[in-house]
Image 1 (cartoon, helix red, strand yellow):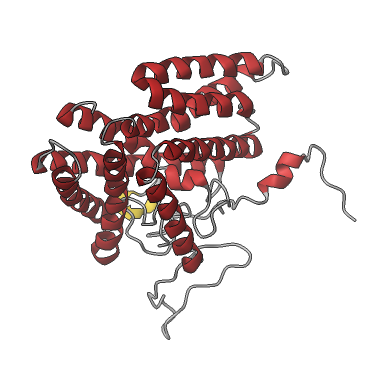
Image 2 (tube, rainbow, N blue to C red):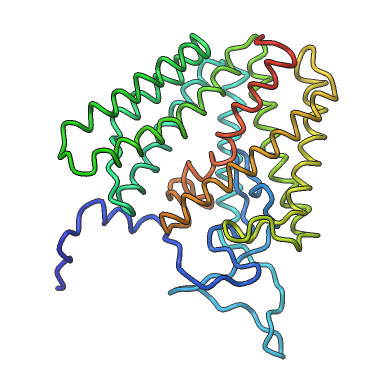
Length: 348
């Protein structure tokens, strides 16, 4: 039996569970980081913002060659790269949990946010350790992240900021108990993780704390999902001009316009029917901002995954990837929606 190479650790074994991104030459329409037309599932399902929804070519063991026409060219058939039934089932299950916790007993939804934050931090720190040997301390991040969400819900922005500062301090102190080598690199990654996942999630908790909190959170979720759906529908049919080819070649400018149009329409309806004191024109601005932030969030996580050389952050959700793959556009959209709702209709 062949022996494991020197330096092979338990973390390396876990890394095999995460799908890694094959390195292939750039080609028109080929994006190894895109979702192959699958539902991106934020959190109910839907494509990535600006994505034209077209399946991307894959290479490597176990992959099938593209179907060819009699002349040897691609037949143009669109293939799903994931288990669509599993993706839809998981998306509907997550949606049911979210709706039930929001409108039956909204305090339970704080627990949903905390669970998503802790699992997201675990995925992010695990991938950093496996691919870059960066040891961002998970324990203070998980405990501090949960405290940040609860503080944001109970004490608002002031509580969230205090909990964030204490979490960053805990990361610095916790890492002191280990070898000082690469200390600055590890704590920098830890502070980044604290801001990227739990701090942005606290804005969802602060939306929930308002008197009409469930309606605000539902508006936030709908805007993100509808933005993704608009990008998919328009990009699939009309997408020809790449939006950010070096980051995510599957996304198109036409898809982005679809995301903006759909989100603005949804924003106008949500502000009129769900938010007390809201007006349709405020909803147009809200939808525009949400579509922009959702797209940037998706591109931002694509950059992280490309740097790490992986396709998904995890494998927890069949047909979807990991929790972080579902939070990529939700997290940066949360502070944008929270701020505009405060400006338009107050804290609530």
